[in-house]
Length: 95
Image 1 (cartoon, rainbow, N blue to C red):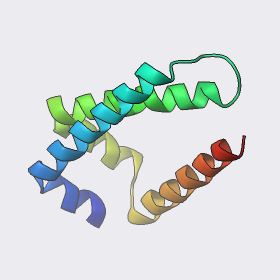
Image 2: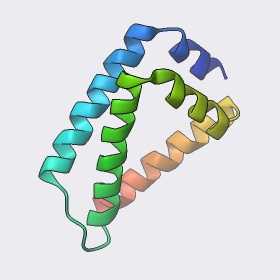
Image 3: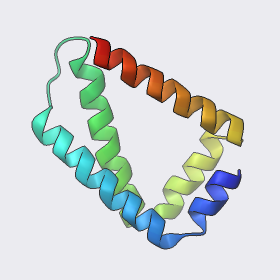
Image 4: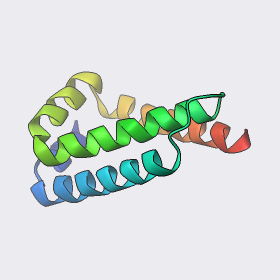
């Protein structure tokens, strides 16, 4: 849980990441809120999730940190999830 500990101990980093996630999610929702077809639906879902995550990070970070700790029990899971996310992103680029 080294990754989560270092993130949780840095309030400024949480604020900056939350602002970035909110801006990026909002921009994607405004430009790509399409709900038909295979590649469009996952992108729209990810856009909404990014915006909501960014808002939660800015409004009440302990809620998101607690949820993340329960969801990701160890560093190996976090790294595997990151690799899976990158593979999914590459699959979306191919379509």
